[in-house]
Image 1: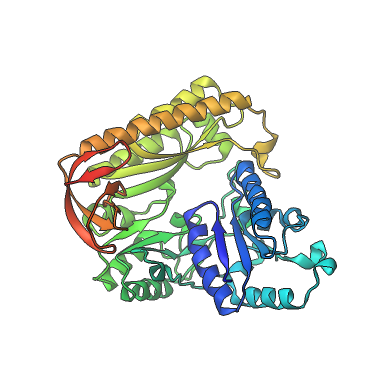
Image 2: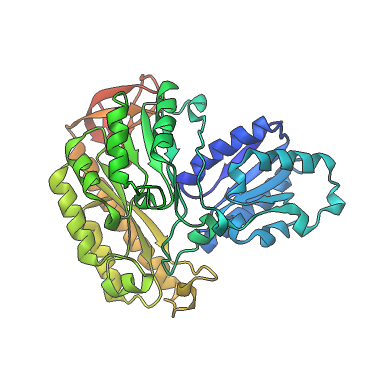
Length: 424
């Protein structure tokens, strides 16, 4: 029986799961289920632990390996679980040597001799300084869209965020390696590339000559004329450089969809989060980009119930949905992560946090409905993802039938069903 990967969390984790599946297969690992965990909230960690217990009950004879951000930040806690056979760190999981060592350990180790320390293969993530290229074989699984990881880690220390301690400091893939990766996936037949990373807009600061993300994208599009659809996974708008603004305005191969790390809409809360922008900065950024690309669709991350957040402060976050004209909303009820400054701040009542999250999600749903209605009658270039679904340039889902997965079709939007556009 082959290796099965169960993925939690972000798009970067999804990309890395593809790479791990390749490494584990090439290492000859079998009869194993890998949990690629997320640490962004306490609930994400709890979900991973619950899944481990459930999976082991359903698969008592298969080995369980845990990796990902939660495994990096709470390695001993996972190693203590009797269901877990090995814990692999976030850096190690991308190295084939770690999977060969895992196969060897499983072949030689008796379960009764497995100590907590013996289960763990987790090094100091803060000591990692370079990023190696990794190519995921997503097209072999029939996916027309593929992720190319160009950056990892984060040098910022937002007071609510544990991720830098799971991912380490910011490090970037050299420009030539990015282009080589992108060229390889185009040659394999992918139609759309998504550049991904933990803090994508910090790209290049650690490289010689410190190239910025905008310069990378310009060179990528210049050297790969066959690349017709390029997308960004998530950006911090305060780091957007002049070249990136120029690409947004002048090259329609960069898809008109940006997902922003906003987090809040109140200045005092933003300061307490240790964010690097103020409320008006976010509004001004969206207005500037919309002048350059009037049809652009914005998504955003917003936290509900950050410590000390009053109702008035929350309302200012809620108002961002309309003031920034957001279409896609990722809402995170505040979750205190041990070891972060925000975990020591005065907390909002849990019931109020849930209610504020509900109100944000309702606003996000209303915004999506508004955008879907606005799209009716428009003709869009739709990437066909399966025989029943596709995505427009703006990342809006489209219900289709009778199309060939992997193709890009010019389709007119005849209506919507509340969740997807309906092509005529």
